[in-house]
Length: 188
Length: 160
Image (cartoon, rainbow over all chains, first blue to last red; front, side):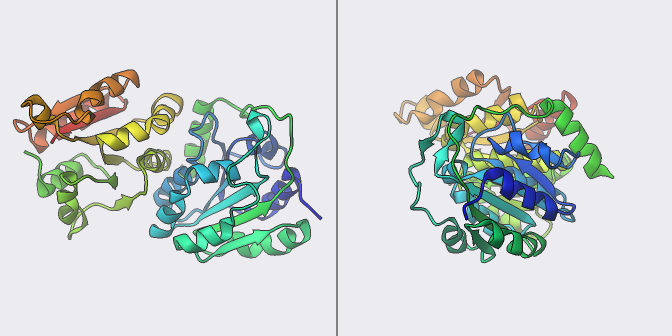
């Protein structure tokens, strides 16, 4: 049974623990349905493709706290080299790739790698042995705890249904407010 | 004159916590000083846009990084720079090697890199200071501290 973005994010919310969660692109619009705490950071406005790098910096700065970044396949393809960077700097970063083969926010055009790129294999090849792949909800529900509670870096590749007609979501609050409340939470 | 030991000392004097870098042949001579005993943590990246985002994450987490790259990488990293400086409004500090700067000004090079470095920074509304052989690490300290006091981003261009 294939998974929707909403379903996979619901499972993620159940297992995120005390990790910071950075959302990107369309996940920004869905994630607040499940969590909207100071440790939830909507990376929007963003520089597309740079969510994993932002997460790495945050994890290096806060070495007792893990950072989950919810990335799209299109975003991941823009910065595949960041997998090698993550491998070079061990930190508790968990890259969750929602792979629908589409650029949803631009109307649903296929990515260049749609249906061909094996992101788990790419992660392993870049030096990240903790790479997971889930293509159905039951498997993701069963494997989420192990994937998210072990040491980072980890890459979690989730095959999800594509959605057409999506618009660029709005973040739950302006960026200055997001930064202020994240930094306040991290300082505790 | 900028060499590894003096630059590391200057960065430490400024309270810099991490160096995020993808060096060129001139900046790369700082490697031994950066990685030696008492150096600074180096975060090596694969592309310069990554460096901007890693630095942003470090700043969000309360650290004080600098990004060290060549001007060619600055060109590549434009969107990431725009996001960090103008969307997130974080005090990003760049040290950028300007390839062929001396050769161009001596009429010995047609390398387009030094032609575009300053206009690119101006286009991104990024304050910068150009340092040449007359300058040294103390000038770098001054540029960094001015930016920090004014809570703004800035770039230090190192003529090569």
